[in-house]
Amino acid sequence: MPSGLPDVRPLPRRLLSWGYRQVSRAYMALLARPSGQPLNDAILHLALRARGYNNFSDSRATGEDHFLDLLASTAPMLCVDVGANRGAYSAALLNRTNARVIAFEPLPGAFEALSTLASRHPGRLEAMNVGVGARCETLTLHHGTEDSELASFSPEVQGLDYVGRHNVHALDVPVVTLDSFFAGPEGAGVEAIDLLKIDTEGFEYEVLLGARETLARLRPRFVQIEYNWHQLFRDCSLRKLAGLLPGYVAFQLLPQGGGMVRRDVDRPESNIPYFSNFVFVRADQALP
Image 1 (tube, rainbow, N blue to C red):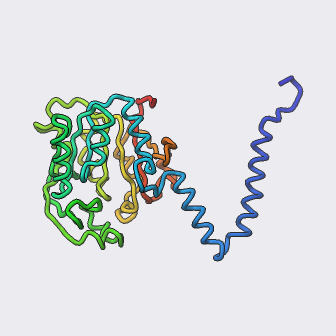
Image 2: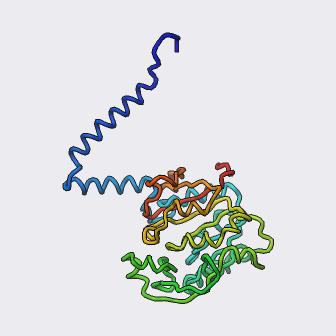
Image 3: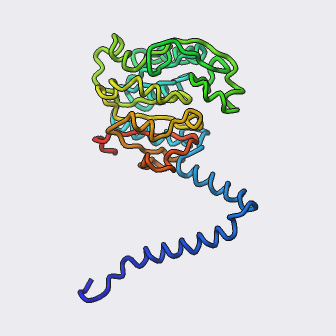
């Protein structure tokens, strides 16, 4: 810009800010009242879905399709699936990568299906019929059907109506830590983990507590965690989970092929306890 002329480049930003304030005032004058709340709720839920929350129907809706493509491009060698259930996620890993998968599932009916999947992929899928937690012990698993996706070790989440109505049975099962597993004979020769995926219906914090040595020694490149309403009942924010993952950066998966976006775990809007998938990426990893 020629010298002596005023720099007008910030003007569009000022106009945008002014316009936002005007629209905001008009919006609140119209809808900041009880009669406006149904529309506010509808807009809020649409915005939350676009941010990556409450997208359940399939792996494209959850954003996992995009992440699996990204993971495959990094040529992973070993993935760990904690809370594998019948093995849908493990199957996706086997089909879309050349990685070996170690999958943990304590519920007998779900483990039977997981074992069948393992038999179809000899040498690539190791199915473990145990739970994973903060210490090696026996815990009560609350569940409904024998292959329930809502089964949980967390008694607090029974307070969720849709969980409590479903999980009417209880079963005592053995629980290991990832630290004990990878320090034992099963972990012999394992030098690195590419993906650690945790979907344990509110028990994610305990899984990470029992994996501190594993995280420090084997340094997974990616840690995927399902974050849900359960966390509200367990007083466990995303920020609290991130505290067990030093040296990692949080990303939220976006729906419908939208990719993933970096989130600041210190922001309240990153800690909303609605269904979502977050991927913690090791800070030294360059994303494709």
